[in-house]
Image (cartoon, rainbow, N blue to C red; front, side, top):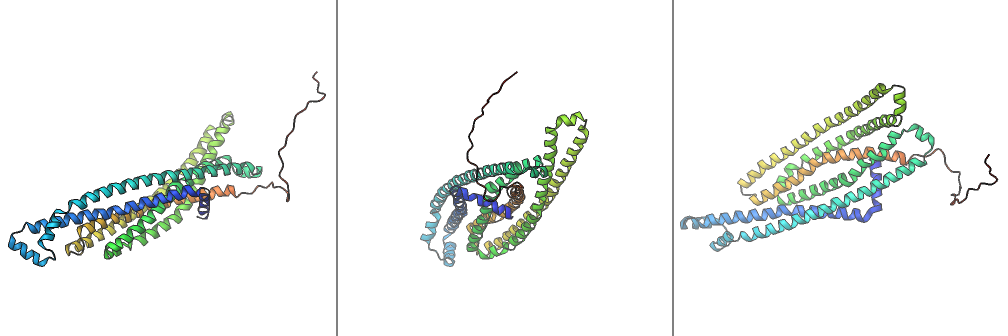
Length: 376
């Protein structure tokens, strides 16, 4: 993780674009969090209107008896019965406005994040190429061409993907989770406390998975490098291979390397196949508990239908980031393993160095001159 954190320093080269990307992300999340409140306003207005109409439709004796138990007059009931259209109209307008704002800023966030990630990938590739050119021959004797190619291409791409996508998803998930829990706590604290035990369990599970996955993804990159070495050697020396009739032996080498790479991918897939169903199970158990206790509160008139709908929507905003964490942890583990391999090259020291106090050579200019040259 230290190397991954070190790669984030490169974002300082693009402070403005990075700031705009994250500002767009926060605005998009804010627009997303407003919509459930508007839905509650609509449902509460409709529910109150339907209730008022039902009371007003009762026979006069029953209506008078009902009014004695309600803190409302006939005029207030009449006003509620006909006033639902206004909240519905304005809620629809604001939902459209906030949805458009969310879409616009989500596009800006995605575009700017991809731009930053491509710029960083450009910098990493150029620095790697420059470093590789300056390293001594002994370094290239110890590290084959295929390994260096994978680090300058595939490892850089995995790091770019996390910076351009995974890190934004992580920030989005954290902000959305905290914002949703805050609104839920103010809406109904007792229901919020029911789902809180789910979150530490999921967090611990992701931390364990992340620590295990990083080494697994690092091994994938090493085996991919080995496969690429064999491919590069055979393509570059195909004439030698064919001259000595070594096609079968080289095919076996390639098959073995491909088999080992596939086995490592399957090993990682097994962990994923356990992680996601377990996370969804935890989320569904939390939702089931909320459905049960929320339904009871509606029956006992301590929770309105609008509040319940708002709570349900925010509940999705809570469990959706929890589900995303699996994808984020996987990307982060891949990026961390790749960042380590990238900085191994950037931090490598050449065995051939300048003497202390050596002066840089100025621009050399000269000409070729043939003097007293004859041809026989």
